[in-house]
Image 1: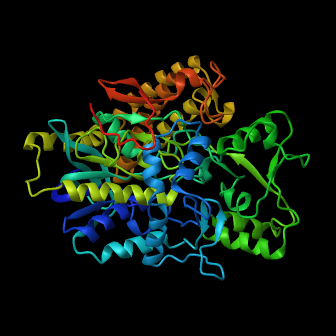
Image 2: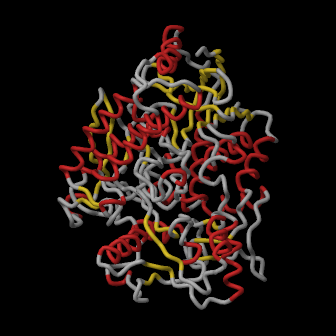
Image 3: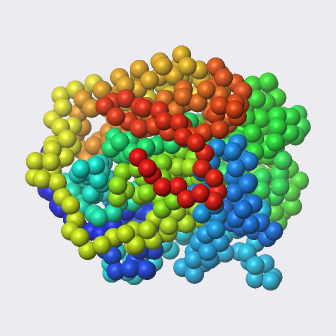
Length: 562
């Protein structure tokens, strides 16, 4: 395999063309003349978590709510371990972000008075099937924005400890890109596919989180020495069985309660109905033999049923198709629910890069937004937009007319050789999908997956760590034959690096703060006295160094001092 090398320069490089990445680029374009380049593994028109759309905006300051009350809600639901400063800065911009989406052409449902239709205190209804095409079209109108679709970015470019760009390869032609930039935004989303999923074989990518979000941004930051936070606060979704469609559409939309096989409401038996407790209660009911568990929909009106059919077509059409194929709707049959495999994602929990108020990472000139940024759970769509805007405005303020720094020719050559070596490897024992499945089995059985009811202990984690290291060695020595193989192998290597850090985070937090999300059998109880703190890490010389940091308050303005 031979690659043509293309070298590009820009003021701001956005890695990842999902919702947060697009909004970052759009903000820079609307408020400055800086050149912006978006590099997307897919096509920005249908990429990222919202490729298929969304039917509600779940982070919104509704009637009777305030940014301050939003912070308190997130704090309660996350057992107090959040970056209050980040959540507060997001909360203050949520409604403006929603209005911006409407201005761009996204349809919002409204009542007779013209107000947004609320689905809950902090959620409003939209017809969001075309959210990504709308954002892509808005970007197309700006001459200072260019897009590289179907390019997989693999590594940051660093010089004297500063990020000066990134490199990657095309998925459609034999081209290797070296992109230099004054500022870089990581907007690659979180990580799916680390654990064995609910559905096997050809249905394995029918999962809650985008199967194409493989933790690439996390992995690049890990390898480059960025500080990461809260990987142990995994996210496990409670979803409709088999289709893995969202349950909030039913639970919040029509206020359906969770019931077991006996028809009993059960969540209240286990504690306050936080996000993770609804999941934990379901897992426990199944273990006790009281399952399967359901959302109680039997008896809803025909009109409500039709609304559910339409709502799922906007985001998870598989659920509507399931009802149609079986010729039975939710008014006649309760909807069975189950937990998914764990994900590492900064939009729902606090996992991701350790960032400051401007969304700067600990690597100079590198920002992180959306699901890639840690510390602020429950940001969802609008929160990711706000973070994209905050980072963009910081970049506009800080970017000057100085020249872009570059690597020397030998350093550039080394980047290309590292990619080419996978074609030159001689080990053909394992394919990238086989390595991926081996990783998922290890993580499922030894690091708290579905098979073990999300529980783990120190002994199992140590076994998982050894096997993940073995798989990393195998992956580096594996031979590829095509660009598709090369992509699959890089995605697997990225997931393995995320898994390596995740295992150390799970072991480091010696308590159980979030049931199921972080179920440490060696320390089954919550310990506020010792663990109201962040578990952070830096990867160096092949080892994960754990760093414990104090909580940051709502009115603080945190800036990196390291």
